[in-house]
Structures are given as structure tokens and as C-alpha cells.
Amino acid sequence: MSSSSLLVAPGTYQLKRNALRPSSNRVRALRRAAHPKRELACTCSSPKEQPLAATARRQLMLAAGGLLVAPSSQISAFAAESSAFKSVVDDQLAYSFEYPVILEGGGSLKWYTSRKPERYASAAPLSADARQRIVTELLDFSGPFILSVVVGPIPSILEDKPSSEWDPEDLAYTVLAEKSTGRVTTGQRVTLNAVEDARTQVIDGTRYWTYEHLAQGSPNEKEPSNKETYRHALAVTAQRGDYLYTLNMVAPEARWEEVGPAYAQAQASFRLMEPSKKFQPPEKDPWKFW
Image (tube, rainbow, N blue to C red; front, side):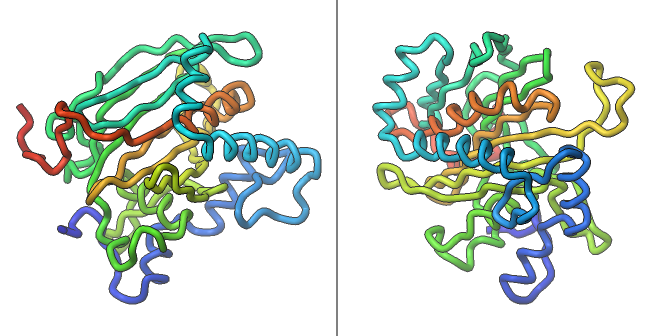
């Protein structure tokens, strides 16, 4: 597999891992700026974290974890019975997920389909090398909130280990770096996100990696005078063959408490389905854009 999309310095796996990550100072700055009143809980969380915030956060992640290990039939049944969620089922790439339309606090999300589910070959690329491609995308302009599924080949940096041995945080940084435009002086691609709460779970024989990430954004029409805006996201990645499928859900940090629990349920609902006759594998004519 070509490694042109992700340039890394030769050396050990540990060196490759570090090449993908933002500096520790940048990670701390992101967390402190977006959460001036508390430290974000993560796999390396500080013991000084406020107890109440940490407890609430653990409860949310445990709830999401409980949904993640539930059988897919139970999650589908829940979604079918609840008007708070709608579903996307794509037979071309054989995946499905639920997404929120009504929030716990009584608010609603009005999603617009900016990209209908489509095969990998005709999907919009995220970068010039066209490896990572958006196969479906939903937008709610009130946030803005963004929900997308991205498919791409396994980065070569992960190929020196079987997927069962991939560290969840390494996987998260690698996936985010693959679609990042950030570069260091050597020309290496680096993610500009801070990753936290990364974990892995096997469900019905398929391994899923779930993670939370935070990045600094640009001012938008909702916050035109704020030079420091932040985006908060939940994501889940699954492997099928030589490709990774990632559901990513993004919201402004200022709206995170409002949508975070619903995003956690959507994250837990993501599944790779048994391929049907309509299935078109990503490796089939990957450069045939018509």
C-alpha cells in the first residue's frame, strides 16, 4: 500500500506514533482554552480534575459504553421505537447508524443531507491524495453540527501490527492525521486534534474503536467575534478488509453539553452490516469517479 499520504520518519513504532500527534503543549492549551473551568477527562487525566465534573463525565462514558456493547438488534429496536433518532442504512458500503433529531432537553436538530450515501469510488475526497473520502454527510446549520462517514484504506503506519494490537489512541490519532492538512517542518502530516477517551470493543466479530477529540476552529457566523472557537467530536472507527470506516460527529464546544449524550448514543449505534448483493467494496474501481 502506498505511504505517500502519510509521511513519517523511519524508526520504531513509538517514533511513528509521536509524528502523528500535536505537541503536548498544544494539547494542554486546547483543553484549557476550551474548558477554562476544568480539565478534560482523558486517558491521561489530571488528578486535580474537579470531582463533580469527572463523575458526570464518567457516567456519560459508561452509558455510551453500555450502548456500545449492546447487541445491534437491541440498538436498532430502540431507534425504531424512539422518534428521537432516525437511521441511515447504506447497502452500497454495508454500514448503518442512528442519528439524533430530538434532544433530551427538548431541542431539535434539523439535518440536511449534504452528501447522500454513495460508493467509495465516486465519493468526495478529503485531501489531494483522495484516500479518505466522505461517503455520506449530514449538516445542521444551527450549530453548525456535522455528521459524516469517511472511508479510506488502512494507513501504512498501522500495518506493522495486527488490528487486535492497535492502541485505541494511536488509531484515533492516525485516522485524524490522515484527513488533516496540518504539517510540521519535515513535511509530515500531523493531526491538530487532542484525543481522549479512546477505547476498543469487539461486537459480533467486528472491532470498533471509539474516541472523543477536540480541535480549535475558525470564527463562524454563530460566533463572528470570537477568535477562539473550539469543535468537540465523538467518532467511531471500524475495519473491514483493508479499509477503515469512520463515523464522526462534530459540534461547537459551546453546544456540547446539549448534544453530547445524543452523540454518544449515535456513536454506539454505528455498525458494519453483512454485505448484500448491493455491496460495492471500496477497493472496486477506487479511481472510477463516474
